Image (cartoon, rainbow, N blue to C red; front, side, top):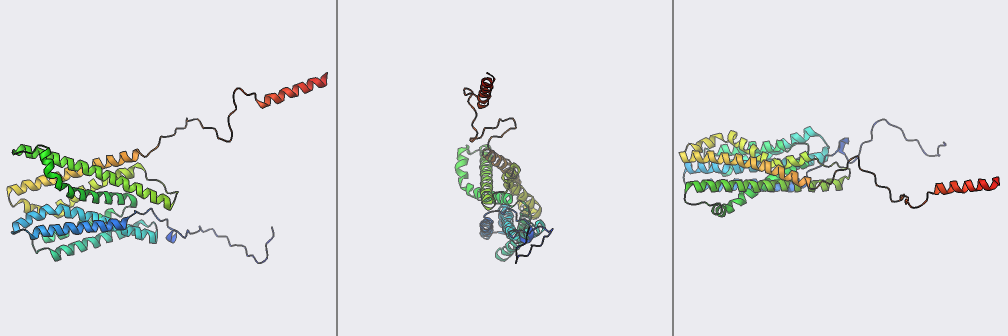
Length: 361
């Protein structure tokens, strides 16, 4: 082999080539689509919850009423802070992954930092806009803790699954608030009358209906988000592996898990506020206990119904399984011989036998 003049042979190297599409040679993980829009929506929902809580406390005439209203509004604020911290951390994780590649430690630290920023902003908003009462610091501190925990949750490696959980949880929270307008007609539908027993039974059925519909909505939203993320990932890279059924199961159960996690944060961080509200009267104590039990039941219902809905929706997209015993289909360019037609090899053999017999005669 001759060398052409003017050409220098390329130097061989044992080092692997670095893909320019991957920063620093690290592969870029699949991002969570729409994370920026999701973060803006979650922050808007958190701001709405903080504003409504402030208006409710400001409208109270006495401090005792302010304590009771703060205890009632605390679960909505904590759930919104948890989702907002996760959504903002998810958006920051997409930016870090696009810049530095698949670096799990950096992404997790960035997610916690984003959650801290959301928590600090929410705590400052509470301290600056709320009236200086004994409940202000409790609401501010618990909200900040919820946002940080939400950011830590968003630091998981599978960003599309976390995005599905966050989107489904946000949709569930919005539905729960909108469902409050349908409570009175449902009370009448389930036979609420003048007796205490009928009111209690109707309240149970209304709560179960709310939890069931919220779970269905959470499962469908999680499945829809993962389907959208899968299509975007395939357009980006056709060789991207598809998510397996555990990802859909976790995404459907995620909103219920976040609701239960919010209840844990409320009972730990907001314990002093709940105790103050329960100590006002015997009726307030019963109401706080009943509301806490209802929130736990609602989270469990959303968890199981959402997981089952997402899993069934994913199962309907699967095709029939192919076994190893299936006979291969012949190719179009090699059609099978008809049984009625003679084999060409047999005809050639007969002609050779006749020619040999003629030469012998």
